Image (cartoon, rainbow, N blue to C red; front, side, top):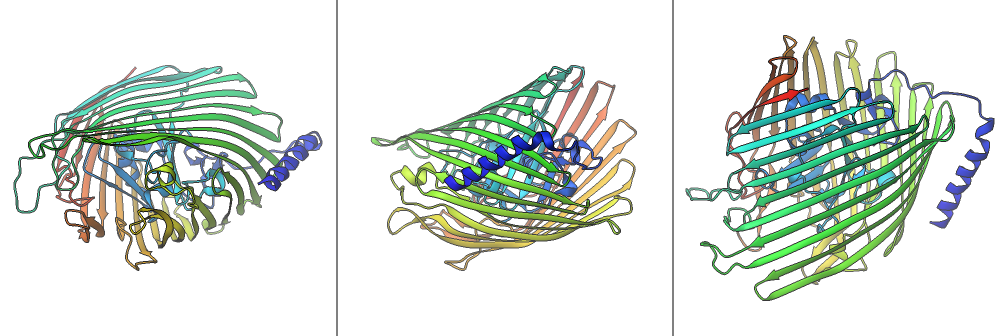
Amino acid sequence: MKWFLREVAVIILFVTLSQGSWAQEEKEIGEYNADDVVLSATKTNVAKDEIGAWVTVITEKEIVQKGKGTVLELLRDVPGLSILQCSGFGGTASIYLRGSRPGYTLVMIDGVEVNDPMGTDRSFDLGCLTADNIERIEVIRGPQSTLYGSDAIGGIVNIITKKGRGKAKIEVSGSVGTDDTFSESVGVRGGTEKVNYSFSLSRLDSAGISKAAQTAGEILDLEKDGFENTTISSRLGFNLSAKNELDLSLRYTEAKIDVDDGGYNDDPNNKSDRKVLTSKLEFKQLLSSRWDHKLSLSFLNMERNYRDKEDMIDIMEDETSWYKGENKKIEWQNNFLLSKINTLTAGFEWEEEKGSSSYRSGTYISDFNEKSIKNTAGYLQNQCRIGNKLFTTLGLRADEHELFGTQLNYKISSVYFISQVNTRLKGNWGTGFKAPSLFQLYSDYGNTELKPDESRGYDLGVEQGLLEEKVSLGVTYFHNDFENMIDWDSYTWEYKNIGNAWTEGLEVKMGIKPLEGLKVKLNYTYTESEDKETELELLRRPISQSNLNVNWFFLQKGNINLNISYIGEYEDMDFTTYPGERITLGNYALVNLFSTYDLTESLEVFVKINNLLDRDYQEVFGFAVSGASFYGGIKAVF
C-alpha cells in the first residue's frame, strides 16, 4: 500500500510543478447531449460512446415517460439485470447483475454508498426506494472495484438526484389506485448563476396484498400487508466563484412495512420499519486548465426494526429485533489533463463502517455490540484517446483493510470506433473483490479470519448504428469467475471462504425510431451459472429474460408508454420442507401501460395499469404478487 501511495504522490507533485509549462489545449470530446454523458463509469464526465464499459442510462425523460414510481421498477428494464422481490410494496427486493449475488452490486445515491452495513451480505434492499426527485440512473455492468472498491464486484447502480436549473418551478401530483393505494408529492427546484436548489417531499400509502401466497388448491382468509413510505430529498449547490463549487445532497426515507413469516406463511402481527439517511458534501475546484479536484464527505445511517407478537395463528410468538448501521467516507479525487489524448485520475479514500444489533425471542436475547471496520484506498486511472477512434481506460486500485490487509485490483476497458460503418467494438477485463460484512465477521457465527470474495470478469461486444442512428444494435458476451466466496458452513456453524461459481451469458439490445415521436427499445439477456462445488445452477437467476418498450408522443400533448417483459424459468428454494428442496418457478410475461395527457400547459392527467393481463406468477417461491392494478392521478406544474 505504501509504494502505491508514494507513486501517486509523485505523480501529483509532477503535475503540480509542470502545469505552468503546458500549452493551452482542450480535450475534444465532440458535441453530445447531456443525456449521453456518463459520470459513474470513470468518475469523470465522458461521452457514452467513448466508454468501453457496458452502460445503461435511465434519463429523467424516460423516468417521466414510463411513470414508474419506484427505482426497482425502472431497473427491471435494464439488460443483464434481474430484480426479484418478495411480494409487492416494501417486500425485500434483491439485484442479480449478470448472475452475480445481490451483495455484489454497489448501489449509490449521488455517489453515497447505501449497501446496508448490517446486512448479512451487505446488499441493498430496493423495496423502499421511490423514484422521487431522481434525474437519472446509471448502471455499469462488470467488475468496478478499481474505482469503487468492495461491493462493486459485479457492477454499480448510481442514482443521481435532480439539480435545480433556471426559473423556480413547483410540481404537485397525486394519485389513487388498486388496494387503496394513495400517493402525493410536492417539489420545487430552480437556480441562478450563484445557487441551485431542488427539494421534494412524497408520501405513499397502500393497504397492499398478503405477501404470503395462497397455498395451492386452498382459499385462505389471508390478511393484507400494508405499506407506508415518506421520502424527503434535497440538493443544494453554490457556485462560490467561476472555479469553485459546493454541493450538498440529502435524502431521508422512513417506511413502515407489514410482513409475513415467509412463503405461504401468513402473519397478521409481523411488522417492520426502516429509516435511511444519506448525505454528501462535495467541494469542486478548477486549479488550472490542466487540473481539477474534488473533496467529498459522505454519510449513511440505516436502521431496521422488527416486531412479531402473538396472534391467532401462533399464540407463542414474541420476537423483537433491531439493526443499526452507518458508513462514513472521505474521498479526494484529482483529474489531470496531461495532453489532448490523455487524462489521469488519482484518488484517495478513507472509509469506516460500524453497526450493532439486538435480537430477542421470549427470554432469549442475543446482542451484537457495536463493531467497526476501517479501510483506506488509493486508485489510479488513465483515459487515453487516439484519433477519435480508440478509447482505452486503465485502472489500478489498492485497498488496505483493517483485518485482511492489502487487496489489489485492476481493469482495462476499450472501445474502437470504425467511423466508415458507424461500428463500435468494445471489450473489458477486470478483477473485483468484496470484503466480509460486519455480520460475517463479528456475529455469533462470525469468523474474523475471513478473506474477501474475489472475481475476474470480461466481456466482448459490438454496437452498431444504422440509418443515421434511427436504428441501433448491441450485442455482448460476458463471463465472470467468483472465488473464495463467503458461505455458511453448516458443519462448523460459521462463515468460511468455501464458495466458487461462474456466470456467463449474452446481452442483446435494439433501439428503433421509425417515426417522429415514436421510439421502440428491445433487449434480451441469456444467463448461465453454476456453483463449482455442487455443479448446480445458481438459485434465482433467470436463464432468459427480455423487455420491449414502446413510447409514442402524440398530438404534442399526449404520451403512451407500453412495456412488455418476459422472465424465463429459474430455480428457487422451497423452505416449507426441511431442510428445503430446489424447485423450478415457471416463466411469465407482464404487460404494463402508462399514459399522460396535457389538459393545459401546467396541468396533466395520467393513468397506469400494471400487470394488464392479470398474470398469476411468483418471483420468490411462496410470495404473492399483485394482479391487474389500476392507478390514476393528476400533476400540476407552476
